Image (cartoon, rainbow, N blue to C red; front, side, top):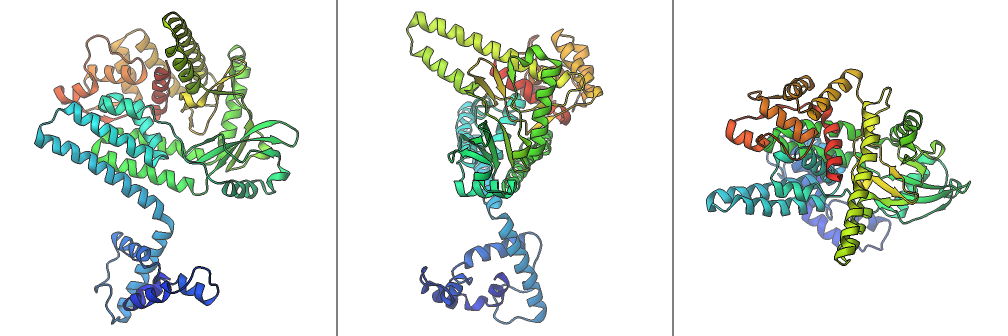
Length: 496
């Protein structure tokens, strides 16, 4: 169609008028008339412009009525590539354009500040609101990237940005049942009725790459069925590419975190790997940490009802830790002074106990001998408070594992941080692969403390931003391999 449109460009208006006279209810020849590019000329012209942007430049101006053979061959290639680009990249390009336009507006606000001399705190707050709104509108990988950057590098961003971005939740509108049913039947190879006795059409949760339904198997087991969206992989990877493109200009030091996350997130598009990781973690805790396993629940997968895009696992009765803590906090605020103090004390104790259990499980999976790996996304939405008092750990799509040497270096770092051994911390950070412009030891200690240990830095150390402003220090290389452990540490710290 695009080739025909390029050849018949002078007749566009005539074809448009003919197509507008076609009614939507007609079939046959009229339907074919509606499908010619007269009614759809604008998208195809946009596709041709897109093809021009990737390097095809015809020798003559587009739209001339007289075409030579050479010009026609050029236009043919021009249209084919443009049509292919439009067919495969319309939505990612549109989302990328929205994101980059939003970032340009935010950058413009900072540029205006240098003219008006407005207080920087006010500019940070205003741009943080814009950034939060932009990320919430786009959802998907933009939410995941905002969570990662704001939790892994809080000192490299303005404080209002961190407070608004770190609490974002990866949610998305649910897809209709017909889409879910088509994926289920294609992946399992049989109708839904032959796989499940009962299947709830409304999902219990939806995220950027898939949604979860509650169902009952033929042998009356209650399960959670995770179904991947069609085209989710291309969309998420495109979103991450857009984030990386902006960070390369704004904050190059954050690129290793996004690169590591991009590499790990690819595993989320194969539910078979997630099922294997989840089962391996459950078996490891039950065999190596039986006492801890009695307080921690890891759902088991059902391989016979799982595939690359469908994951069926045991259902955990409970609610997310985030919902549980928020509900208790609201109940405490509504109480009188005496009851409020009691409830707040119970809330604090519950949060501490939950933190210790999750930290113990993560520590066993990170540092344990022969560990299968650990989940790199233990935020409160992926930790459940079960009806029997246990904690449920779900979502093993983004996971990581270390070899013995990497575990030894990481354990060495935590040991020296715990004993406040500055020299040992510096040696461990260097062994991890961190480097900066001046290799300032105070800067490296601050980096390790704020990203792997506690929130408040003792000893009068400057923040990372203060180092950059006052001493000209700047990050050159961040140990990409350890970024997911850094994320786990900061998520657990935020939970506490």
